[in-house]
Image (cartoon, rainbow, N blue to C red):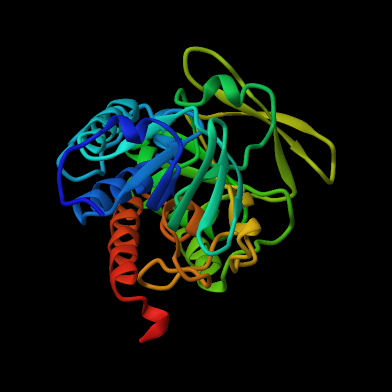
Length: 320
């Protein structure tokens, strides 16, 4: 191990052996890299694309402390610049396979790595509706995060698409900040917890049952959605300023499955309060571990996972 410092030696420019390898360079992975390196661990961050994760698609963020308003891309550029002062971030380095042994073996685009510990921060992707106009209107009225973007729609007409806990929570949040919100749900009953259903009824949030979004009308901004009633087949158009899609997330858990990590019913990695998984020396943080999918939560998870990793490498918890 090295002492704390800002280094990026030539020896770190090729695949090799490390104390910990962090897979994924979203907020969780970047925070983990900073904390692991500052703790004296030899580490590297492997990212198949560019640093930032889903935050890169957010046009504006207003709930990250210290930044009253900042574009998602700018925030992640600042985080990545900060992390690069400490840790080597290898962009375009996709992890193809992970194997557990005396040391973990990682096969990546540029070669083979080995390490004593792994922090998974591979994130998740929003489940999309797959309808016409959706892709083109992302950031222009289509959002997958009510707490991130809802502020911009105060006093405006919006719809939340979905019927689970996230959809109803989003609808209640949007209602609470002054949006004129309706819920579009493809079934005749919600799947959400009863207390959320009761709250929706109490607040008088309109629900369009047995209805799906067929199209999001494109323009400079979202102006309307085309809806189809599944019982009658009737297609109608509803004027809206925003569409909040809450039909689930797909965790990027392929590597977790290879490591035989325990997953919850939604496919998210199960971790304890210290972000340890069921496999010694494997940790998970950020969206892949579920929970509150917010930037601040991901940063906390990455930092906590790195500190748990340091503690375990010094004094393995499973031997105590």
